[in-house]
Structure formats: C-alpha cells, structure tokens
Length: 72
Image 1 (cartoon, rainbow, N blue to C red):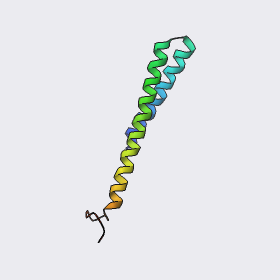
Image 2 (cartoon, rainbow, N blue to C red; image 1 turned 30 degrees about the vertical axis):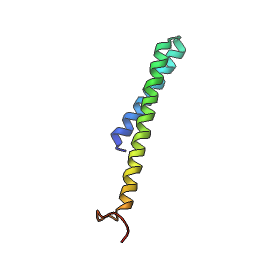
Image 3 (spheres, one colour; image 1 turned 90 degrees about the horizontal axis):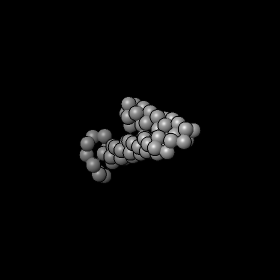
C-alpha cells in the first residue's frame, strides 16, 4: 500500500469518527450516520489496499524474480 493511500484511508477513518462523535454529542443522527459511513469507507479502503499488496507479494514469490513462473 502506498504511503499516500494509507494516509488517506486513516484520514477518512479519523474524519468519520470525529463526525460520528459530533453527531452523538449533538443528537444529530444524520451526522452520526454520515460519519460512520466515511469511517467504514476508510477501513474498507485500507483493507483492500492491504489485500492488493499481499496478492502482489504472492505473485512475486511465484516468479523467481526472473519473470518466469513455475518450478524448474
């Protein structure tokens, strides 16, 4: 996962959580729900980036670094 992708995902999580807390403390259900949605989007984005990175690493392990797949 790129540094910027990870930072954006964390930013979305923090921003969403802040909006959730604002909604809870002010009795604003719309803000609370929107904050939860933003937070969950950030979490999903981070998990997706981590899964993509794991898939790339697995593909790199399958190729012996010379671009040829399979056993020899």
